[in-house]
Length: 584
Image (cartoon, rainbow, N blue to C red; front, side, top):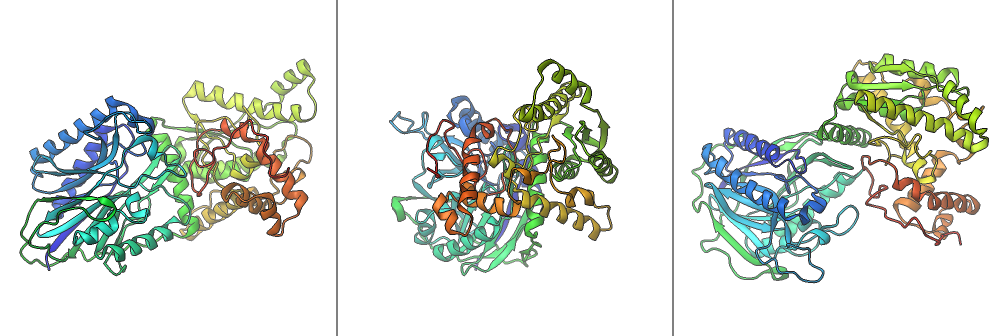
């Protein structure tokens, strides 16, 4: 059987940074060539970054992407890498860009190209366009209608892009019809909790359907609210794992494969879903037999807790670094939410770049300051204390506020102080709200909701505790100081905006609350269905009303890392003005 050394480069691209992304592609191609690769691949839209969103509708950006692709092909050849086929994702347009109702203007394409000998040897567009969750690809792209196949050293390699594997039909059965010896899919599939198991089963199933070894190359890194965990997978035709890459790490998966020889004649014609085979021969003859050096193997996989924590670190780091910031600012209350955000920030960008401010009021407990100071001692972040009492007294003297208005004033004063320091010193503010609070509207607009990024906005409160305990245990297992004070984990959660206040004054126990919220927010279950799960009807009514009436608050909350199947933002789009209530 012909042999092929495949290099799957799991890299982190930044949207719009065509020059920087091209530099990364050249670097990893050079690395792959140095390792003796025969075919090199990069993720979906690696040249432009993903997702490009409405940049796809801007002709200037589409043309810049096409020009960058041509320049990349020429540069690879100029550097002596022209004989090495390189698969690169980029933004293209259909050559038949005729306006048509319901078709994106300019006919942009989510495309990939095979670069060889200084030119584009083959290009193709994603066939299946996702239109669910965070994906709006029907809005942006026109679908591809070919079954691309390249012959490399006597092996026919079928090519696909991400959703082409996630949907039934199309290029997977077409790869079998075309007689491919390898199916290579380039992807930018965003991370979700427990998606790694789903992804593995998907790749196994598609390999069996395609009847050939299947390589699933994934992007890593972060882009706004999305995180990409890598987790590149290669399985044989029976679904057995040959190789699996680490999560959340850039790197090259290098693999020697024995693959079926291509048929003497080139496949042609139309196959499944009306796809026209587009076959290009790059090198017809198999390589002389060689001793395999890279047999594959699966990297150790992260536990569920470690995986979520690393996703949050990756998302935060990407947002800070890719937007040109160097430091972050956090209001530290001594509570569990701000403590976890601080630990994430220290792990993401280094404690020396994390600034904390304790802002006690007359209602702050003694332990709130002590716990914030202990957090700073354990992590090494920079902490200052600025009481808000003088400002609070001045407002109260002028306005004479009471009740909820008095409580919220304290939060807004803290938000104002954080933004003032941010403006003065150049840090970006991190908002510490969690998904349970955002769901119920348990946050103050222009107060604890201020910030440029919300690292835990998609993390329910029960998971906040779980992640804090995991992070401490992980540190202890490595002989390090656990970053989060034990008291921050064990004391009852409280906003401390009035004497003796705790969260359970207005919210049910978080174990109960989060289970209801998951059913309503994440799974779109109705009132009757949630009650049927065993929850008290009056409690369900109250919680659902809180969620429904807080939509306007969530619209004004900063972006934050998405880790669930349905985060607040693009995943869940509900009207603010809305008289429909599940509760009647």
